[in-house]
Image 1: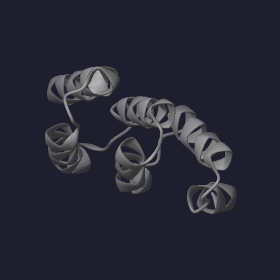
Image 2 (image 1 turned 90 degrees about the horizontal axis):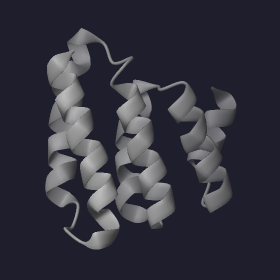
Image 3 (image 1 turned 30 degrees about the vertical axis):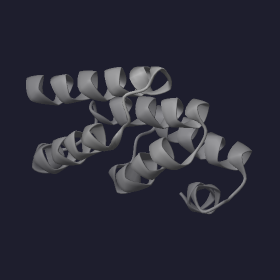
Image 4 (image 1 turned 180 degrees about the vertical axis):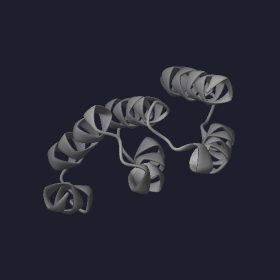
Length: 103
């Protein structure tokens, strides 16, 4: 957790990517807002990886946080520009919301 905290505060894209990949493997709800920020603030590859980390979080988010998580994703979907580069992110976020509804 300490290494993840350090990596998630880094400005280095490589370190940010390592943190995101770690969260893809072991999702931690407390990093939801940070992952959402990475979708909008970083290059498209990092944004796509952050979207996948959020998708993986669907399988571990508690029932108590399910509604809050879905709300954050719906807000994110409204902020993602409709461009060819963002279609994958939109698709992943929509699929994540659909999975939350099924959970």
